[in-house]
Image (cartoon, rainbow, N blue to C red; front, side):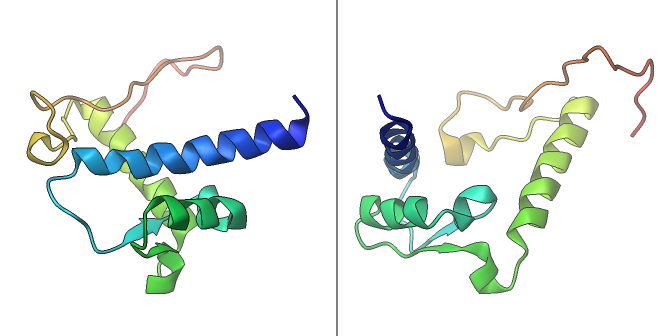
Length: 117
């Protein structure tokens, strides 16, 4: 497969996977807000708009938020809560059977002996 075809396939798959998540939502939503690197990918944003069948899809920057900071803060909060052993999912929203800790902290070769938060 040519690199351009592979990239197009992965981008389309990403857009469709995000749109397919609708089935887990309790009701129709009014808009989809995107942050992180995907929000700067014009092709992905077009594919998302098409996949969401008319539901507005826009980057969080349209609300005046910094999408790069928002994504970084979200992952920092999840890491902090995982370290503390605090569940961060919302079973009433996600349909999960129970609250769970999201993510894991996996030490690598450069692991420090102590982590403090």
